[in-house]
Length: 277
Image (cartoon, rainbow, N blue to C red; front, side, top):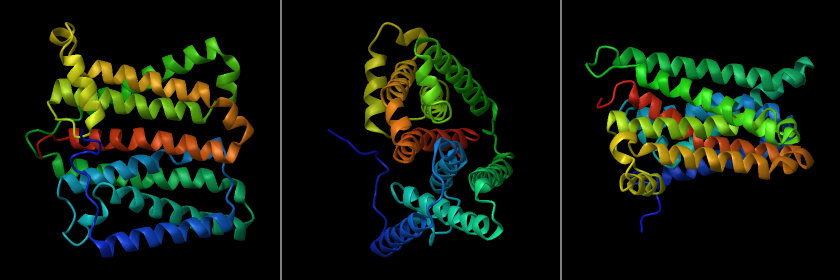
């Protein structure tokens, strides 16, 4: 049984050594700098998660020179995005210490990430706007639907278990939104755009949905979306006390969980801007 995505391939050894070494170095430096890590950090890292997915989409589209392509494949792109994010965080932490305003570091981290993400999206739109397949409609629809679903799920959790919402008021919605967007974009790709799924587990879920009577009128992506929402909500509810009792470790765990949803989701949306190109 296939476990890894079909595109999974380690980069050549020199690239792998550089990436692992770089990731280790920035991890040590970031630990020494002791930046503030709490639920706000999960929010600030949101655009950086999307940057990682966008990086990989650019690699799939063949937009990098051959020399740099190995840095942005799967799984190398995770390390590349981490090194970039941690490096920027280190710089902002140093500036905050020098200026005596460390309380603005997380805010600035989110702003810098948002700025880089906007630039990447502008580049993608600019190079694909002349293509016949260019269409921003479905990426926009996916984003709006994911936001609506996030609000509904968060509202349901807050009404059912208000203390859970209080304990996870920042990190929880990020996790749910990340996986809602992944589920919605995957469903759009499968049922509307006709993109084949590379990851084995989503493919199995959608193949099962294809055998149900609902496949003729509801497609196959809805089941994967439902599973993603259920798992994300279950994680938020199950780990809410951990986030309260261990705020640093809890924030890191929630950020990682959000990243594995938002990264693929951003990848989908960037590809969907001009599918087939």
